Length: 145
Image (tube, rainbow, N blue to C red; front, side, top):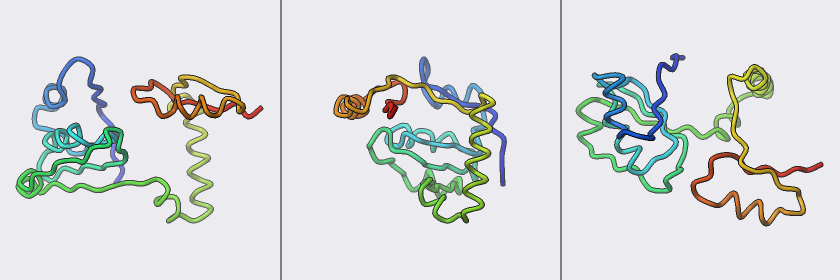
């Protein structure tokens, strides 16, 4: 079932659980986690009973700690999402439709991304080195023109 996103919590000045409980004192029904590690472990505790956590990234490169009681007692569900596998399970026409929808969202400004730096193709090694640096604030692109 499709759900609208009501809040996005960005951790700049307060702890994750404090931020979630300030917005939704009883917890939240759904969480999208692209970080994993300690953040993923913490966000699991922000779910309401029968809440759902979708993990789709490994930015921390650390495993999520899942104490069994944090899953069993509230009957929480945790699932993974991997875009390549999702797209592979779709027909060609479904994939074309997704590309068109995504392009419209980008054109309208709903979706966007920040670009940290663009490199010429002959600077490929510098671009790769930059892309591997932790703490980047945007994409590292190659200019193929």
